[in-house]
Amino acid sequence: MDEKTRGTIIRAYGKILGARTFSCGKEGDLPFPKSLIRQALAQEILVGQHDQDFRNNLEAGFVESETFIPDTEFEQVKAWEDTFHKGQEIIKKAKDPNDVVEQVAHLIGKKSYPQHIQSEIVNRMKMRLEQIQAMKGLSSIWRE
Image 1 (cartoon, helix red, strand yellow):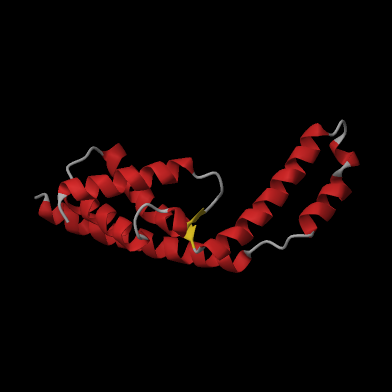
Image 2 (cartoon, one colour):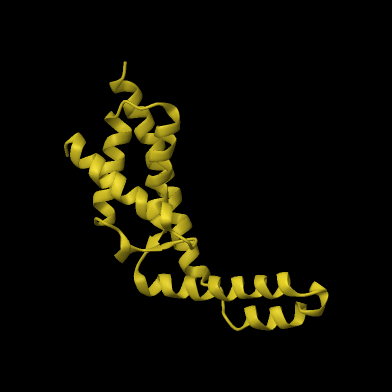
């Protein structure tokens, strides 16, 4: 993939990543397939000539790509996070937060946290971190 194509893919992905309002995003909202985004990021990490801050952003974007999940899984996470945020708003508006603890606990208790989805995301993110370590080794060889 050439430098211009990588840049186009990475910039488009960065806009989506920066606009995300939940802990994860919908794969369907990505401007390119997730595998192509990761490929562009990996190549740029390996061969791009960037300062450390920019490299850190590329690496973070590479890992964060795993937080874009199938739309059906996203809806489960979104529903839980929406409920959690409603609970936070109730607490903020309460004159005495102790008065609403039971109400908030009941509200949040209605939605089970999608732990299986989060576990999968975390496992894939760990794998991407290991890949970054391998890329760092390769890129240092190429820059000698």
